[in-house]
Length: 340
Ligand code: KG4
Ligand code: ZN
Image 1: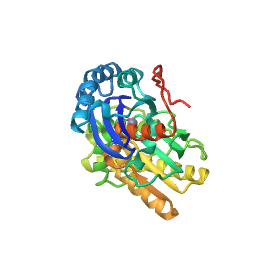
Image 2: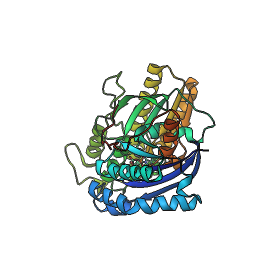
Image 3: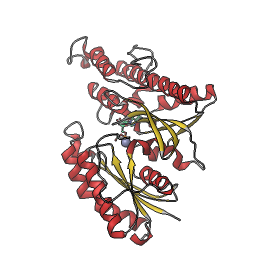
């Protein structure tokens, strides 16, 4: 048996997990920093880094205690190395390097988006590759071609806002609170998705990149009037808000589904996997299920516990990379960028 300790600190969640043999998740601890950022309306990088420093050590200790493990029963350390907030990543990478050195075990650096893209495999009995991976979260919207755990190609990404960010900003326009995805999802279920025809930005018809900032502006002008940024919200009924939530969700989901199918056609694969926080969205889950079924494609949606940022996906992918010979050196650097 191989036990991997996974560490995730790329944004505003400190997470630690212990995974045996790449699939057996023994513990999956997540400390959110939600309260520390809420009053600023978004993640403040400096506050995030400090919170990781305060929380990480205790969380690692708790993971060992919960699994009744001694550090000598940990065979390797996997850590999110990129992409993300650089200050936050440095905390996790420094902790991982320190533990790898003192415990004398191998270290592996993991790409956070690759981990989201492969997280659907954690609960599967066998690997689903090759597959197109759709990663939709608060920070990322990417399409990747997963040929194998160590052979993942980026096919397209957002050129501006991430899908989750679009949900959060729309919720903020409608004063529905943060994070916006879950509440918009709930309100959308009572609304009419065809009530308002919001724009579907495809960029170029063949492009696998995304753009959601125009949609956010369309919602803003729909609420307040063209060219205005305030004054309109009080005129809307609860029913109007439900319709905006449903119509906005339909616009996001349409683009995500169309581009995923385009990526499938381009790569010739027969399987789609979906990860990231927005993978929890009911309209997206229904839309992808319907379209994949109609085309005879296999669809694997990541289990909810591994959709939002977590370290189980880091440890699981770390295991697969270690098995394939990947090793991080003790001078491994964190990077804010997506990388090769
Ligand atoms: O993966 P994640 O934790 O993102 C990053 O940290 O980058 O996902 C969080 C994002 C938020 O933007 C949240 O609004 C969105 O996922 N989200 C949803 C739903 N649940 C969470 N978006 C749409 N529908 C949902 N049900
Ligand atoms: Zn993420």
